[in-house]
Length: 204
Image (cartoon, rainbow, N blue to C red):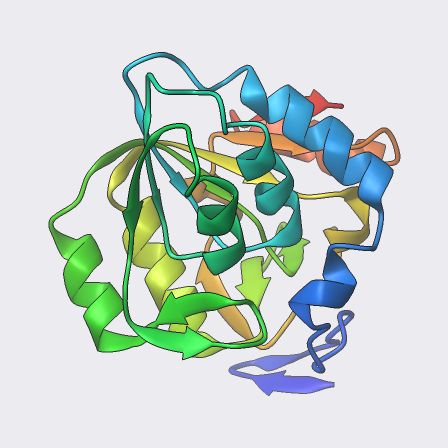
């Protein structure tokens, strides 16, 4: 149990983080379908942000022929997919977080403060109605919050296994996202509650 003001809640997700290389081999079919659905939200001339995460990485692979957009990212795997060809690429520097293969810290914070994106494609380690989007590292959660405050639309790419999990640190409340793209096993009650809150839900 995790103690909080006025009570306690159970942490359903593991506090130990799965390495990025292992994540990319998990639920690959679902992630591929989610990435295909997310691709429809990428429009010409847009500036988009690709956050860290294995599902967002799957989307990055599909953007290698898109020369009509700008991609901003702090994810090394996502950037690696786009170095040979494709969009204008802006790579955010900072301290390397090896578990997610992405940058965090004050340098990343400063770089993102003055950037504004049309859309953010975000992953998450945990997702719940009460506790929102959660991650394993408070610094990463802070960076994600900054990114989402600088975007017109926030699109969350999360397979159904993330629902109900609560990890160590919250990045933003669930109400901050505009679109959730998930798979056919997404809990129906959870889906219904999101739609009541005005969040678009896409089943890939």
